[in-house]
Length: 309
Image (tube, rainbow, N blue to C red; front, side, top):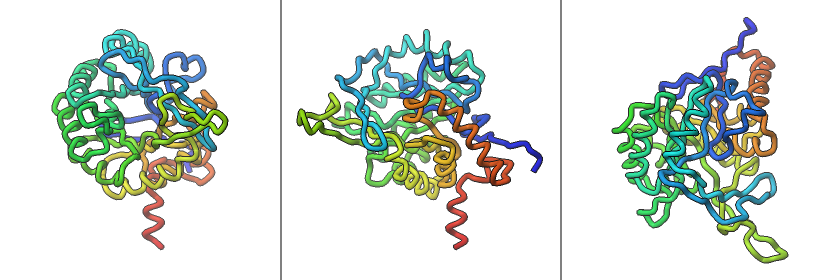
């Protein structure tokens, strides 16, 4: 070994200095007081909506065994404020800025993508197709192959910047949705958003979340997401960003062995704001321990090991 460890990964046209980035919704302004954003692979702020939105009723978060349920409701100040304040805030840093977009309709996704992509500081777009389609009986865009294809293909027509499709795990076959997203022009897939869940207080007999149900995240979901990453990696040839329950460096390594090129960190940052930086260092230490010089030597290796048996 030369002693130099390469952590660089490619997501479409984006070259990231390392594979670690925040999960949208678990990252925001002010965290730079604790975290050097310039050390991350990319920054992905909370999803933005076209118009201001107050979010869901409280309580919005509750703890569960090995995880948490949240139902924030994509609280947002709207696109105009995002352009005026959020993008300039993050453009101060020298890592790719990837806004996450949430819309109530395909038309909103297209309009917002076109406008945000015009910003020079924006390196790519994350399309949060896990959010409800108000024209489709409230089902998530990403629950339907045809709707997924239409949404991404229409966004693809208004920008050449890399598109990351954030998939929902709440489907019968995430592989079918993944294939549809790639056919439509997605450059990368984020696998995946939170699992729909519910918790009930056994004293009050009431749901612990004001919106009744919410998204389960944390270590409890990681084995499910590892399985999904593995399956999607077998079916598509675009980079996958693993997201779900990554709490430490070895969790990230597991996701990459399953086929992820990069990872997003969410719940871990609630418990430890510096978790992303620690995970980067733990990945380096793992590579050194195993006498590996390039992180590319890890990606998808579980597939190779299974084929050899």
